[in-house]
Length: 314
Figure 1 (cartoon, rainbow, N blue to C red):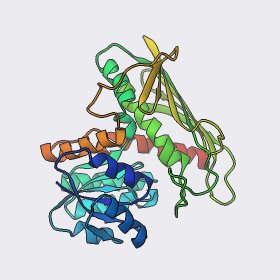
Figure 2 (figure 1 turned 90 degrees about the horizontal axis):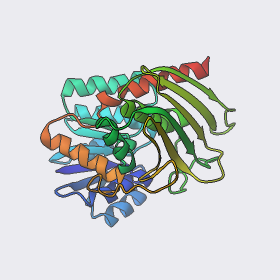
Figure 3 (figure 1 turned 120 degrees about the vertical axis):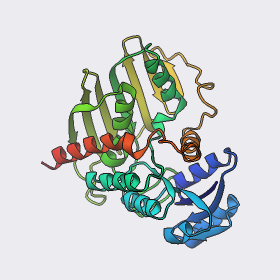
Figure 4 (figure 1 turned 135 degrees about the vertical axis):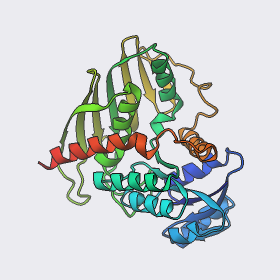
């Protein structure tokens, strides 16, 4: 399958690394804003064609799929551009930074019938898959999720600590992971959500601290704390408080409530969540089915984010 990747930054590289482990996938073009940087990354991964314009890459003969690792503000319009060009698309999280744009992507997917998937990686991390499998088997029921998303990021930088041209967002990007995961793991919609945020950064124009509470139809609750001010352990840590045990997921690692490790190495074919979501994307295209984390399945998350944004703006 011929694939293009847009964005040679930190997450574009994560996808390129994952794709190297997947059979019969050929990256035929890499799209980037800076030609020299893009060509350097392309050479490392043996990608022959590079472009600064997504349309040029989409026009490469035989392209069947695109993975978008571009700035948040471009995700919706580029996803629609891919679908209209007849190309299946996976966009990195978030799908969009507005409810209107998220709906527009879903409408484009419904019109074309192509695969449109969003990089909600937590659905694919083996640690969260382990919990999900036990819930699906009727062995666990979530009472509460307590989640901390902590970074130390007071300037515009990416996951590699490199400067970038766009501004990240606690609500539309980082909260999207947990809002979607809460819906996915409980199998229910969020019926109540509240948010408060700290002061707006004078240069970045975003809140650096935020707290969100959610509740589902059956009464499961979730508390999410987010910060770009945390000078300490970085990342996102999920505590699942269930009717039959407590579990703490730290990316691909899982421990119980007493910090005893749980082996999740056999949950899936890889321990790499990005690789696993890419495998799902390509499999859905080959099999002509809706993927896990399709735009339709994650759309409810963006309605919650929209409602929370309205609260914060009030």
